[in-house]
Image (tube, one colour):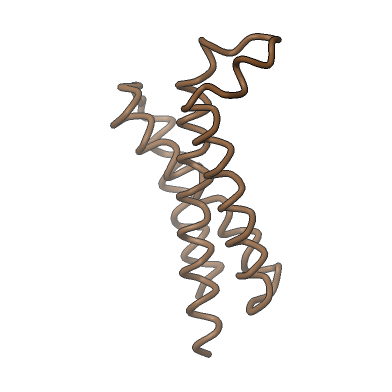
Length: 113
């Protein structure tokens, strides 16, 4: 049972890392080009590191919990990405986007129960 809670915690942190990776890649996108110089742009490197950390945490979580539990929880990535994009990127939400976020959260709660 302790391993299950650890797995759930790791997947939550992993989804947060994935969302941070998306935010950093969005920040890096205007400066990216086909040349190799774009690869060494700090936001791009940070985005890739966060994505890598997310994958490692997910693999460890899968060691202790079923894929049928972990995979649906990966949808939390959308929730984190939404909140981070509002806060960091100053993006706007409408009622349909909020409804989608609420449905995702309810779905994750149902799966975990």
